[in-house]
Length: 196
Image (cartoon, rainbow, N blue to C red):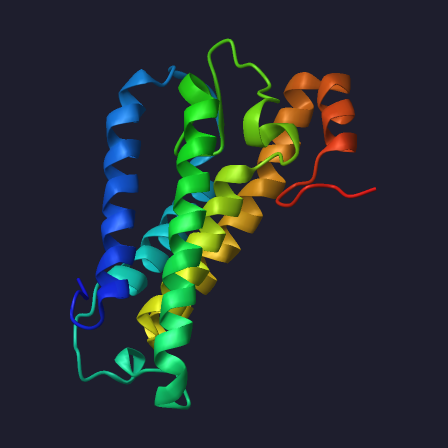
């Protein structure tokens, strides 16, 4: 992992560690999966997500070009790093809140749980996929905080995965909940609140 450098990088990675620990502990309270996507689709998700996180958190070769800083001017390093850390912390806090509200219906894959309920409280009142909103904000913030090309590439892979999953989850929930989901969809945004 990349912990060398300014304090804001260490704070960013520490927040990721706490978030990961929370997800690992809370996964034991989740209901069993009743329906999930086909294996090929899940394998592509796994490749994108693991690839993205590996690029963000691990540097196999410090001298590689992808470990170079993308900041044009060193004067931008500190302000963008601090802003990035703040974005990462805000995104991870929002992610944890969303995970707590989703409770036993959370899944690491695009799936329906046993006796699945359509959650419409907390952040889900305004956004259908706030977990992805939080994670996308956190990965962008981390890329700014760390400031290396590989972190930008990792954030890009994760954004592709999360955007795709949000679309597919909408389709799955629509098939399961029908008119209830259609009504929910009309008053909520996929990743950002719907403004009228």
